[in-house]
Length: 121
Image (tube, rainbow, N blue to C red):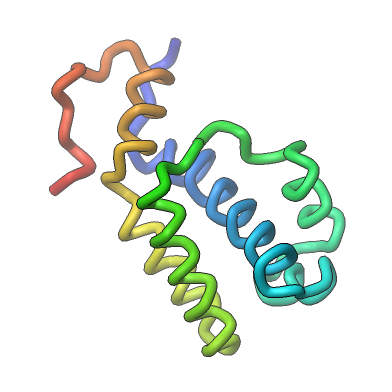
């Protein structure tokens, strides 16, 4: 296993997982089409389809509390579509030191101490 910086975990795992969760929320909870969800997230319809079929972003499983945070972020995006990127960025900041991120980082990098709290500062 190679060593990974927390930022690498964020880029390779958190951002795709957020996109997936948002795509699922937009389509299932907010009745958007895949095309509309793709436009909001700046993605292709194909990417949305892959997220919905669990073909992408399966590295992180968000906790129930983390899913509530993402759901609030989805509502903000829908209310302020012109600033979707800012709201997605805000979500990455909120989830940066989350339990899901820390657990994933520890599973990907054996050099990470079990008591690591780098991301929580």
